[in-house]
Length: 148
Image 1 (cartoon, rainbow, N blue to C red):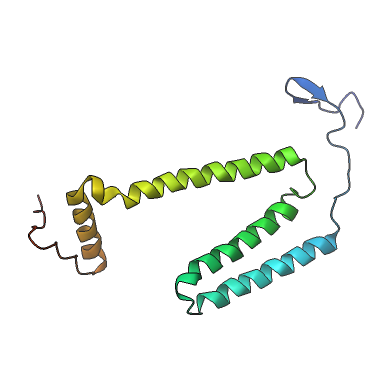
Image 2 (image 1 turned 90 degrees about the horizontal axis):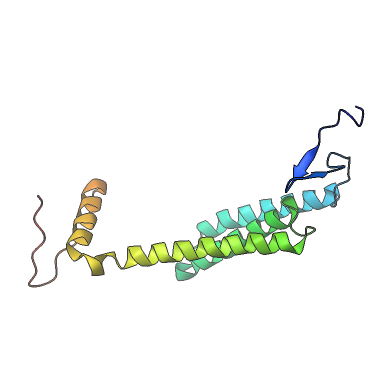
């Protein structure tokens, strides 16, 4: 293909030369094989931990293993380990803002009955009826809301 027929790539309105040149990968294939084996081991660990009775530690252990797997994928398969630190900053900032979004959503779900106790009781009753659970008994001196 001649230089005249090579399509130009524009970034921020300016032409960029040599975008499609052949380049080598930063990591050797052996690194990817090691990461793949580590991901398989961590997946087996996740499966094994799911059958252990760890009580309250089950969720933190599962999250720790998931964090390790996600870190490996981000570092090696997304090339963040060898990339510009700005891209790492943008990626981590995005994860932080998603975590903040989920935190505020969870706060809303946790406080739902404090805002509207009748709606909360109705939700729990309809959920229980749908899945065959017994609806919770109302506290002493209160009556359950009537269905409309």
